[in-house]
Length: 212
Image 1 (tube, rainbow, N blue to C red):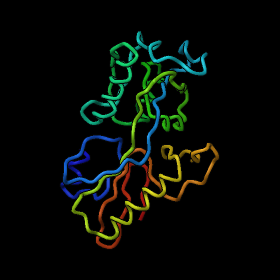
Image 2 (image 1 turned 90 degrees about the horizontal axis):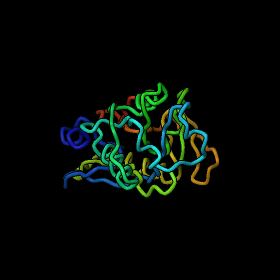
Image 3 (image 1 turned 180 degrees about the vertical axis):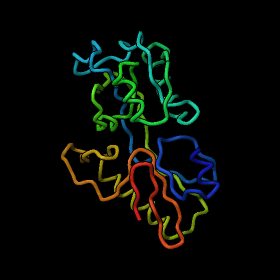
């Protein structure tokens, strides 16, 4: 989807979890995040401050949809494989909020990037994973042939902002790399956002927030 949106010039910049891109697409890694477990608050492992992923082997998993978020689905499979089991995936969703909401409803457990813990959804509990060596990377991508000064400047600004901040999901406080709270830059994006070209301006177009 990311490559098609850029190729079709429906967007000029895409920010998404890292995936393979063709030669006509330029990309850079913005940040790397460890995985966390999301559990229903009634789950027996919530009594522990940290958990082993192998302890979730008997559980049903809720995953990001394999067709829309192949990189995240493969990350789940890789992490569980490293822990010695194949996850039993019962539900697939496209949105982080939907995934966490299903967990909160008691329909299963999930693995998410650590920034998802800023999604405050009642009934969901986040726990760090001990010994998990699989992480996820957030990347920014744009067309290699891009020459628009506005688009290239936007790429630079986003990379600079992310290098100075650990970016949570929309509507959450922002914390610096050392854990101190910092102000969220006005209109800054989260999770997956796209910058569209406008003849008069470059606009950040997202399901969460817009910058004009």
